[in-house]
Length: 497
Ligand SMILES: [Zn+2]
Image (spheres, rainbow, N blue to C red):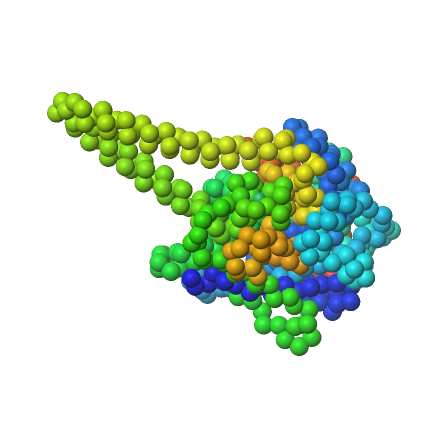
């Protein structure tokens, strides 16, 4: 299948090359059409509080986590739309920053275990992590080349920011690189709306309410978008389609690049021994020991097949119904009974199937969150976001596509992971956004208007709106920061004139 396999260059950023790469990163911010972002965290604390019924309570719990835990790595994917092309062609630059919080922070044993299993290198983090201080600026404006000034550059670039299930990422970003978090959620969202005036987009929200795929966890959504896009190209459907281009890194730069393959497994033969839990949530308590398949490609194909089967069944049933009615008119006795009986069985079967799917959807929003015993859950927290991990499944981790495992042998395939998760997750998030945008665009650069400034909330049917309401004030620390962010630009502009 064309364009389905892909090698994504991820630039590895750490303290020994941060200064060297700084100009390239800032230029990528400034020239991008949108920026996708993902984080990996040292933990999230008690899962239940993060899914509290009240959103204000949830905010408080996540704030507590952000004050006591830290961001271990940051993934940035800068998507620049290339002009003059019929399709949506993007030049993509992906950075994976290894970070080290300079203050004490909590790291949960489960998170460590999870991260190590997924290829996170703690030696590298302690030896080479880019250091940062949390909370408010410590005296004066932050200057020089560091994480806090990089975050200021991200704000100055003023591009749409794209995340997958992004609430937790945003709260951690604010606390780690910007300022102390405000007490009230309303203040936080008011601040965010001024920090990112070009809009914040949550691809999990877009997946649930615009794309409407069977599942919405990151890897599933990304692979489904990629599959639909390549099918559309193959069958020569009218565009636009998404095409990606990457820089050709040479010289010294090349030594910082990790080429991350993303290969689809196409062999769909053999028994479909798919793990139901993983299929629905992108997470399963047995993790790599699960005997069932966690292959996202296989899961997508199975979902597509069951949709198609249902469609056919419905069609068949309609035909039978029409035939039955005809027979009734002809007053045919016995054969009619027989047919009716067959049809009932058919219907039963179908009903059961639909029910199963309902449970799947329901589980995503409710039961699962409560029922997942925390002892069994891996430190999902570790992973970027719990939900990104699918928030739905609270402790999930998003399975990273294990590109290197082509062979569908379950035991081999389950080495979920690979390094540079944050960078690659940001890349996948950006791809989903690019794909959803061509499906929903109301004009060039209109992105997905229906999804602007709406963050996905696990277990809620309504999103969190990022806006400044008439009742909410901006925080003082934020006002001071905004002055810095915009002031510095003016001298520069004057200098150019
Ligand atoms: Zn499983």
